[in-house]
Length: 95
Image (tube, rainbow, N blue to C red; front, side, top):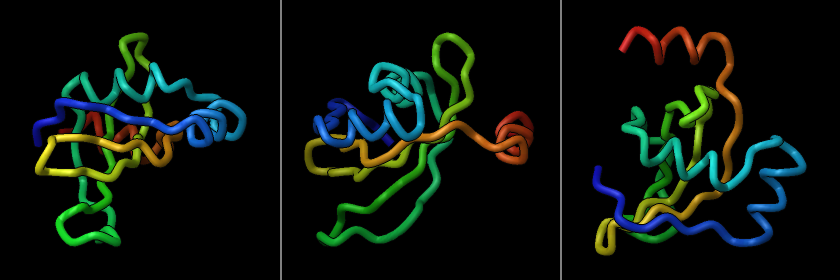
């Protein structure tokens, strides 16, 4: 999956900071640091599905970023992000 553009709205940015203690910068780092992508669910618009990116920030923090992928423009629209659980970290380390 190729991502050329990463977009995050201000309300989502605020939610990430307050609820999950993750900055948009960290979420972008995960998307740029060769994450493992997983299909999450079908999107509302045909062809624009929701994916989860499992990866690490440049500082080593394990994070999952959920985003809508627009394949026509190779754009990722961040909708949520959180720390990986211990189980997810183990699975990520095995791949």
